[in-house]
Image (tube, rainbow, N blue to C red; front, side, top):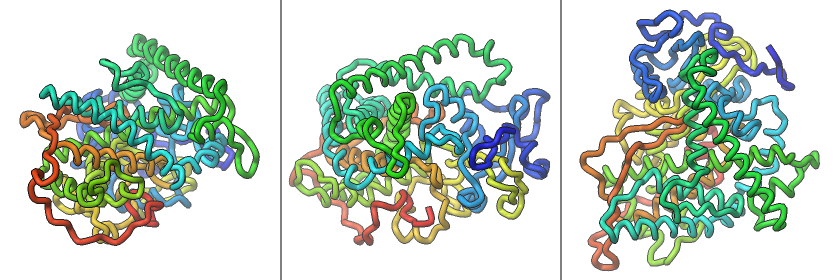
Length: 508
């Protein structure tokens, strides 16, 4: 097996090689020859099928599909063990590897041994500093105002709004504007921008490849493969045009693209190549809006179904922002309850629903399961976030108070992982959290959100997760004295440093 520069293999593709006592790990009954553990599974919902198996089989289990054996982990203690950076590293699993034709060795899809990851990370990390975030805030507000104008028109006409579609428009325009000085004109289009169509196409194709034997892919996915090739070509052309325009016009306002084109590594002096710039731009445009739009959509769904939580969040917005026409950067971080709503939505439906870890050396997972060097496991994040030993017997219930400061401190570390873990965790998590908290605050301040009482949450899977078919009716709130009594303010919480990770624990 090929080794990387740091001595790590690229990873085992089937668990028989890396788990010497694999037979001890539970698996579903009814295994079929050649096909494996596919009874009761749907190619459209592989994650949700696996979650149902997890409930029956326990915190470490395995499934076999088309000749490959996969080990899944979701128990809090086992997941915490996999988060140990001394013993485990990121593994680029099959689903993420399927995106490499799109993003190559971009930040999200790079193997550990590829040097461009560290180069790009070190060059781009200052773009997510506190100072940089404060600079993005006015642009986030501008894009949010376009969303609000769009919802105002729907409200005036008595129409419902397409929540996932509108959140996708919002987050695409936000990352394009703040990161690359570009405007896709999403809110002026009757249909999704072709970039979004191509992006969804590549994610969906990557998901489909997970459910088809590799040897049969050329036949079973022939037409889909041609479509995927065209989608990738469109993404490449769009980004090449964007970069060419910046090179012609000169530096922008110090955004991410400026950093990619102008900044040298602070130690080595190395710069990103033209090909690597393209891959990083695609990575940020895709990953920077797809997951955040899903997080916002799930949060709006839960707020519409839990009016007591919506009232409490709205009261906090009114109290913290007061009569300010637009909130300042610092005021967003003070929306503690709104942030808890977002965290609880990400707990129940983390929009990037799994991450893989591989052993740096021979080890024993949780003191129970031996793993050889390079063996890997997939952490099933929605189940980790539902572990009753961590979250209690009502772990499936929506309750933002799970993220009160005292509750967070009482939990073991590494039990809330919507952004992955370790050195390879999402570089843009603070960007996403600020954007999502700001938008939720703005929408709560302006609207009451009326759900369709007939709607039942359905989750669509395209590597990321999104509510399917979610529509809400926005109703303008009464203003001033006509709003009615405010919900009493909860006790003031201690200040929490924004520089920490989403669960606000140094251990995470």
